[in-house]
Length: 105
Image (cartoon, rainbow, N blue to C red):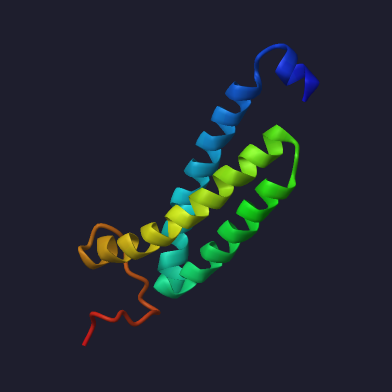
């Protein structure tokens, strides 16, 4: 941590890590909607709350910042899960043949 601060790399590490966390959530949204539908949204709510609380409690700047990014990426994922369902309905993403969709009759 001191090395990152001494050489001015802390912001760069936080930026790269933020990019990777957000990038990781894109396939998670697709897979969760495919296998579980929108009913998994509350998992991301819990993850976001835990991440936000942990971010407040932890004093290390790097870890606290990354937990904050994780928390708010989780909150954003709730919206994305429901939007992914719409993308599946439009045919932009594959449907899970083992699941019944609410728009099917």
